[in-house]
Length: 316
Image (cartoon, rainbow, N blue to C red; front, side, top):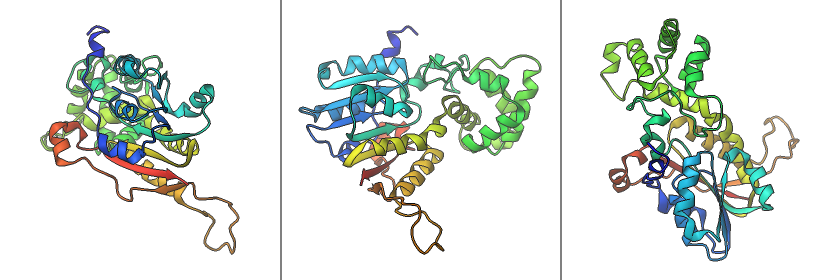
């Protein structure tokens, strides 16, 4: 696939109306799309801005190039930055922006990354093991699969993939490495299929799904940075500003839910303390007690939206 082909992907934004409504767009506001992707959400936000600005951040260079094309007509209102949303503070500081009116994080692998077979995200396409969202970083899926110890592999497969066969898969990977490196996605799929008993492979999702999820999360440090990113984002919001986070699996959603809950608390002192000693103040109002899910119609039109959950908070 050529560089131009990589930009010809169709992006279908998930929970679009719900996000735009959740952000409470003001025509003169400043907004951050921390996961710019194909710019679907950003396009709708920009349409509603008259004098405002949107800062779009993405760690994927293909997404940056695509977004620049898609948002060309809004060039006076949009600033596009190649970075990771964990670096939100430095991005806004460099732009001289202290506070913003709304922030969006749309997590997980975008459709175009799955569709670009050579990126190594998909167990359905044979490619070199890569899975880097930011292709300028050094650690790839190949490094995880071929260099991690058996115990390290078991740990990430269990914690990040919730894979019940984590121990066996880790054992089989290390065993396979003794005959030579595991270089491609199909090489890894083959090892996983050997590790999981035949009866277990015949039910449910693809046998490699959870392992690929776990390795992708490890390569991109997705869960490591999520809680910190949400806390940072909330601190950059103006009073009344909104944060919207779309997650695609239970591990992400749990982190967002728990972080929102933590930011929503006033005092975290032990109950036996007669007076508050921690001085913690409530920083976030939870708008969505339960996550917003895609409608049946949206799932029919975009099956990849099926597992999406949207949580919204408001800066106190």
